[in-house]
Image (cartoon, rainbow, N blue to C red):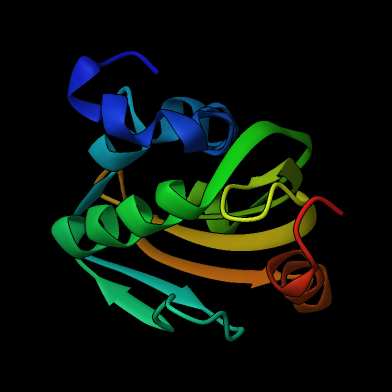
Length: 145
């Protein structure tokens, strides 16, 4: 994580670093939060308790991720596949994350597919899909499983 102003988000660093790497020179900014604006729409097409379906703007996204890093510590984000569409204006990334649910110590692993729309060298829209069953199993598993 290149900037200490994002130190509180360190538990999600593998995810942020993977996204930054996936988008490469198509966007400006060193950290994930530098890639979004006050108008960015971050949409998730699944239900996870405590996580909104639509988040609009950088501040709201940072607030949501404060909750995320308070609940899950990621150890890795990998198996990245990048698909470029619409002349580079749309990037589809497939990836996996692994970590630990902090409240229970349960191991967490999940697969994602995110469709990212770029405009003016920033993320303008993010649509996210994941393995909801994997998340549910990790979040509801008994402690230490």
